[in-house]
Image (cartoon, rainbow, N blue to C red):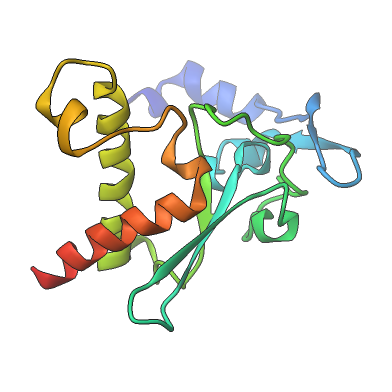
Length: 181
């Protein structure tokens, strides 16, 4: 018997009441007004549309010879990080300025980088992902006795995402390799 058709489960669904949750950490970044979290929207909202988690906005300028990435922390452009769509999980993201070694980035983008969910393998997205993976590998090998880490390639202590100029330089290297294939 399917769990949804079991009498006990069906009865629970009929009596289920979703609430508005008041949490002190869910607030608008600019006004610091506390906002209510609606359970029905928490059940249907993906991480990328949950404003307290958003950390950055990524856009691409394709007007030059090679595309240029623009990665900005949400604190610098709060209106660019407000989730769009059918959700009441609104407001300017509540995460304050991030330390250089912050382990998670929730990056919001737009049609300058991707035209939709199925556009994940376009040259710009692939080059961006390879650039980030390359940085992770470089930093994990830093200080080890290996030809890769000690020889041709060096790694900084802070993630590449916290160094926009270097991010663009390395993105350009991988983008040119990617496009030529």
